Length: 163
Image (tube, rainbow, N blue to C red):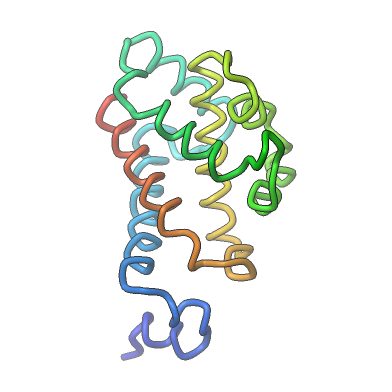
């Protein structure tokens, strides 16, 4: 029987060079995303399901329980340099998700409401998912994804627990 991890390591140095912690973070992200999409997005990740989830969390008073402001701060530090979008922002490939305006609002506008912030964060996490599932992260640096995957997993778990 072929061991999938050994096989991919023999085919792709991008993966074989990752630390065990990086590999674990990526694997956990795949697992948690699948469960998250099933449990809180009705197996359909899109603007409507993101907005409905955000509205439900806001209306239930639980939006403050999911670590939203901490994730927004992390994304601002990661995707902005001197108040402008950087190369990491471009690597999200947001155009493949129709350039959701909520992401730019979440990153650039301090007065953005909680629902818009949450939808913006969900779109960034969704781009992590798409870029991993569809391959762009293999072209870029998988080695720079551990913190993204870990923070995204923690965020999704908090949402599931509060939805």
